[in-house]
Length: 393
Image: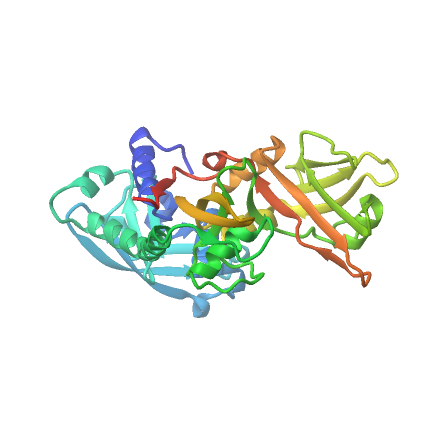
């Protein structure tokens, strides 16, 4: 795809600021003449990730063509269309996409935004349309109606959860349910009626809840993810513990932070190899060297799964008669992390991982991580601009 013009960049920025998930495509002269466009990798990934279509599972030939309803937008009206998704018998079945009637609404090399919403694909021409003007207009128009509807549906659950948190904060400090570092989050989830479990899915109707004590400058948990054991020289957490663990009284454990910019006291460090898309953990012991691997694709997927939308809830800690209480006071609301930043932040030591491996009294090895964490006050390096709400208003 060609470079975007300043106008197109501004249109894309406005849609991003309005939390619109989209992909871009550029019809060519030949494509418009033949009523055909290549479904590029970004288009294919977008359709798959948004549950519209997976080209990988589609057979070749016209009999396997998939048709999806579409709408093409102009400033003052819309045109109903159909999206054809198929793989021809020729040219190795390279994925194709087309919108009926598109030639009436676009010129060669225009940049089109494709937005998947409510079972339809919505097409906005970023080269032609004055997106910001249409959204800000006092007059009703199709583009504004689409953005408002998407925002309303996107924000229904977040507004519901924010109201629940505000009502909870009004009740005052809440007694911690356990004496542990994790109690700030577990106490909040119980107070909200959320089941406490080890699921990798977000906590509340698609929104992840992350709580922390505001008086501690601790790193924030992003997600847990074990290495790819098939690609790794070590094949289990037990092997990692046996190689690098230590004894504390009667406990055999490995509790440590591993970074790409320093080597820790166990001689461990991380390195990002972008050429092969791997995150590698390494030991200074030359007999061990590189011992476990994560694919960056898997880490990106976990980040997107866990933090499509997240409430980061800050709490003040209050102690009374030896008991800990939490006053939940502020929420930072983030959406859609920028996955390309993840690798950079790993390489810069802003994102690190924690091993939490322990052998219990029965000899069983338990791994609570590895936890990938980000430094405090660094969320804006990984997420687009967030919204911050005070719960005590």
